[in-house]
Length: 399
Image (cartoon, rainbow, N blue to C red; front, side, top):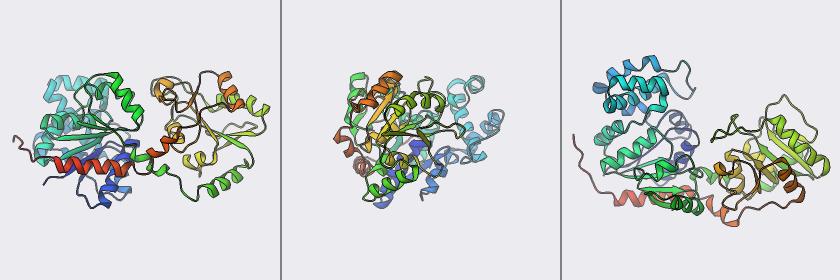
């Protein structure tokens, strides 16, 4: 019988597939795995045995497309992506565009949009005809993963997408009626938000995010927390952790605060209440009286473990804090982060609102049921994969 196919493009989405694939491997469940872009190297580091984008190539059909895209190849690529993989990624994307719109239009689209022009449904349709997987398992990222999901629908192959956070930017695709048969979401609140949006939805499963299983508490956490706080000079103090965004803008294009602006915002509160200190992951060229720069050898998870409160704009660490039971104040960006709307975190829209919340301690604590979302999500998703695989019927594909 054919096997499930798991794939991801990279980033945090790759961590979802790593967790699920590792659980399937632990159960001795056979599957195939494709790592697109940075996922290939990430899968290898996790001890998995993936294929890469070149597995999707048909040498007889794609030779001309490799030549056609040479002018568009980036001069520099991510260290986890080989030039051969990049070339294949562009050639496959171009091949699909040429089939749908013609070669001239394909050139125009790649010239204008680069890799964002790609959604190679026809490439995955061709691959599925050759390999006939029993089930496709992907995440909710765009372009190649969305193309695989849509190709599976056209081929009559069952599909399961696993969401990461709140699925804000993915909403249109998910509700379009041209998405996966099944969708794993972080929590029931996310599922309800999708239902409220209307449209045609996959079957929803609130099973958590497998990539967050590592957030489950450990017996040694208390000792590690005290060790970290002593090292940081915060023993006996309450610690506020502000993880700065990794870019100048949020995912919705709104500007994020710099380290200096965060310091200017928090220093008055710390001066008025000596019980508080704050920690940031920031550039080392600034100093402030009541703060500490996160040492480079401290992981974000260590910072969460050491703190009592997180203030976040647009970063996954806000959600990770909630799942660990740490109170969070969202500083703006609520329509993107969503968790203030779910009643999981407080929201401050201004510096004065934030200072008042910190000073009073009158901020929301995470609901207890969030803890149930970490620790065994990968196992729950693996259970679903086994169930869907067992129910899959052999399919006939056109040549």
